[in-house]
Length: 150
Image (tube, rainbow, N blue to C red; front, side, top):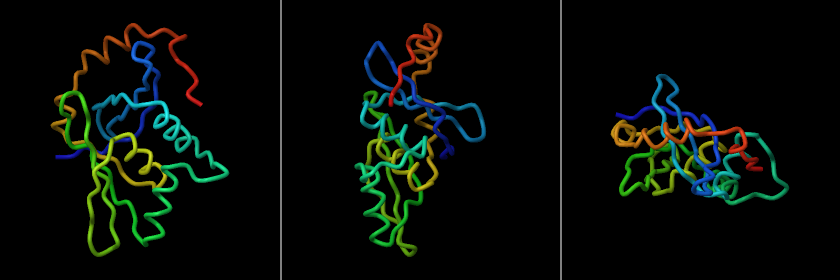
């Protein structure tokens, strides 16, 4: 079973120097933190802020290519976690057939935000996540830990 998610925020993890993409269930309390790199975090932040860049960035280019091929993004599914690495699939359709494209979750979410496509997470992935680490990190969070990602 898949759970529909939304981007609940981006946080900076000063311990790892990485960003956390926080997905939250649209209906329910389930959350999924995914550690991502700065370029992907910047791209997601631009999409969340509806910032239009003078020239297309990589995720804008992907969106433009999909649209130029008369296709649309139907959904994104984060479907697996192996050795603390999340796996996602970006689904595109021409209206007749749907194709699946392997993707990193951060890239898939960045494209989904640009195409207003839904993001889902397999329930088994949420069940396997390590909430203790995130909860401990959140308990120890200080105001100065929030950095500006833009």
